[in-house]
Image (cartoon, rainbow, N blue to C red; front, side):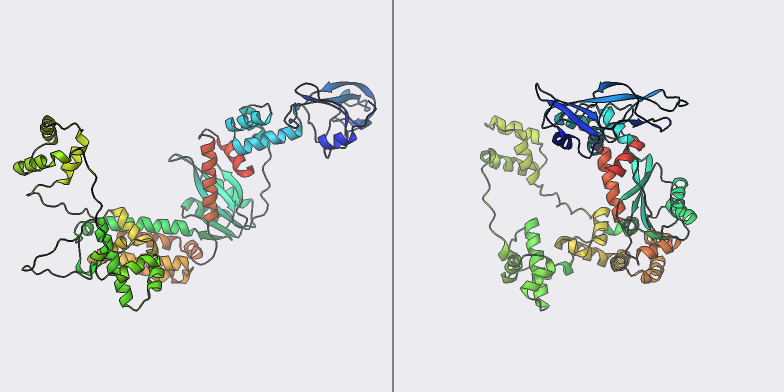
Length: 535
C-alpha cells in the first residue's frame, strides 16, 4: 500500500522500531494488523554469525492484547535465513522480534506480562475470569505457569532483617518469612521454621547487623551460628504476649480468690451506709442501668472533690462534658434515673392475674406446660414463648436470689494486662476490689505495670531489677517468664532498648494469610512464594 503506517507502528508497537506495520484491516469483529521486521538480516542463534541470505518467509500469528475492546490479530511476517557459517549445525533459522516475541512462544510479550500480572494479583480461577472480561483468552493453568516463569527479585544487601514463622497448614506445617527491617519488603520465604534452613540464608548475607525475631530457640540458634556478629533483637509484641500468658497462669493458680471475691464492697460505693432497721427503706431503682448511674455519680463527685474541674474530669475519664455535667449537677444518683417506659401490651396480660394466683398457690412448683394448658382452656391463643418469658421473671418465695457469677480467668487477665484507659468504670471498680482481696494478684498487677512502662519507654536498663522482683515474687507463672528472659537476656534487652521491632513482619504474615485464602488453601509453597515476593 502507498499509505505510510509508521505512526500506527509507534502506536501499536511502542519501543519496537524494528517492527513495521504493513496494513491494518478493521472489517469484522477483529482488527487485523500485518507487520514485518525492518532489519536486512539476523544473527544465527547457533553460532552468532550475521546472515542476509534469505531462504523464505511465512506469516506468524502470535496472540496479542485486544485493542479498544476489539480482538486484535497480529499477522507478523518472519523470514527464514540461511546460516553463513558452513560449520554451523543450523542450516537455517528464523528471525526474532526482540521485545515482541520469544523462541517457541505463541503470545506477544505484552500479553505474557499482562497474564502474569493477573496471576500475581488474582491467582488462577479469579484471574481467568478477569482475563475473559478483558478479552484475553487464557486458562487458570496458564496464569499460574506465567507466574512461575517469573524470576525472583534481587535480595540486595539488607543490613537489618526481621524473621518470623507463618502457617502453611495450621498446627502441622510452618514456614519462615524474612523481611527487610528498613524497607519492610519481603526478602524470602523458607519452607520450614528450623535453624537448618535459616542459617544458610543468613550465611549468604554476612552484611546483616540486626536480626529482629521472636523468642523461638530455632531462630536464635540459626542467628548465633550463621551471623554471630549480628545483634539479635527480641520482638516487643512477643514479649508482651509471653507476659500475658504468664499472667494467665498466675490467675489460674489463684482462681480461688475469684470465687471468694465479695460481691459488693463498702469502698466500691462512697455513699454506702448501714441502714437503720427502724426506718423504712424506700425502694430504689435496680438493674444494670441503675448500678451504672450510681457508680458514675460517685466517681464524678469523687474527682470533683479532689479539686478537678468538669472539663478536667471529662478529659481524665474520656467522657463528654455533658455526661460529666449531668452527674455533677445531680445531688443524688437517683435523680439521674428517668421513669421506666410504659410496658407494651401483651397477649398474656388478660391471663396474668390467674397465672400469678396459680404461681402463689403452688409456690412456683408448677410447670410451664401445665400453665399453658390451663390458660388455653380460658381462651389463650398465644404460644409457649411468651409464657416462658413471664415464668422466668417470677421467683419462688422460698428461692434465694442467685448470687452474681465470679469473674472469669480471661476477664481478670484483661483487667491486669490492658491499658487502664481501656477499662470501663465497672471493670476499674471490680479490678480494685479484686486486688484488695488478693495480695498475689496485686503483686502481679504491679509487675505488669512496671514491665509495660519499661517496654513502652524503651528503658531496658531496668530489666535486671524487674527480673529480680519477678523471681522473688513466688508467683509460678511470672517467675517462669522471668527465668525465660534471663536465658535470652541479650536479645530481650535489645528489644527493650533499641527502636528495632518485628511489627512489619507481622504485617507480612497477615498478607500471606490473605493470599492463602485467595487460593483457597490449595496453593503449594513455590507458587505462594512467587506471589508473596512479586505481587
